[in-house]
Length: 286
Image (cartoon, rainbow, N blue to C red; front, side):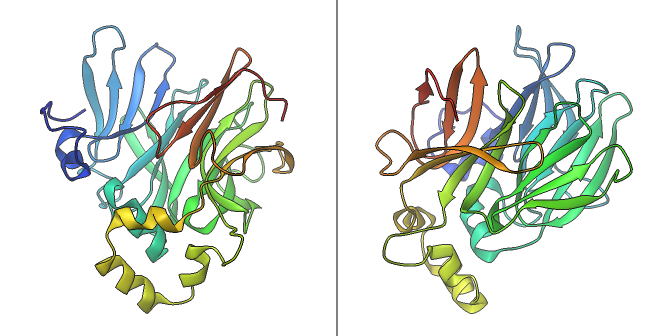
């Protein structure tokens, strides 16, 4: 999405220059809407590859630039784009620092391509990540990854423009949320919050801000992966947030750190933050 350099993709240090697309959806006109973590919202012609900047990170909203654009969802009724900015401090390549510091520096926003208007719907969020519209588009579900919570933000009805907690103190840290083939919600759990011998690493350090600041300064980001369990987990939720089913890979033999779950024509595709391939399940009954 940014400069096309030979070094792009080899180091996260070049992400601000090369760009890092973090969410992709098709709009009503057959155009790809891409949210780039460092550069902004784009419309991309899937036939020609031509890209058009809709909203830049430097422009931001309410005087605050975007630092970590993450996910998006598009209304099939109005064409409005809903998206998350996970932090106003840390960029995508420093995502682990955002989680460790446990900052409430994220926002949920909307952008109307017709008018060019951007609106802050919610602020002071803990690393807002994946979002999904309900089947009739009367509310959004939103994952707050760093505190293991899922919110519902009402778009219509008597509770319009208010939020409520759907799930809290979750068994793991939610990443993306998607609609299943039959209208339920599928949640990818990037890291479970349990270990066989010790408490979860992030829970262990959560009450100690000084320890977290120290770790953020001295521990290389790549070292944190060794402290996290390799466990694949997906949750299936009903419209009211009740758990309807789960999918487990307890020893990570196929996948772990599940970031996204997408169903299409009977197959389930499992996105991942660590592995260089895409696991595909021919059948999952929940």
